[in-house]
Image (cartoon, rainbow, N blue to C red):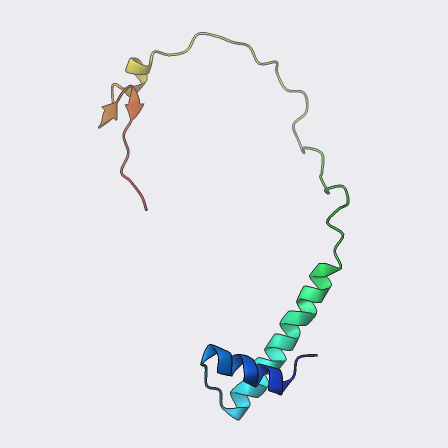
Length: 92
């Protein structure tokens, strides 16, 4: 399937140097990857998606529109608020 010559060629194109043992291991790894991709390709992705019914939901109450708390009341204890919303530290 994937041979040492092909691995050597790809290594040369990628400007990667392999020892003989590394080349042998990389060839085996690439062969395994290709076998896995062939297996994935066999999967029928056009069939109906597999879904399960919701578990433990039972009978749910009907949604009813009701009065809400005023935004000013909700944000009054916030350390920092702006435009009736909480201001939180940016996390990147």
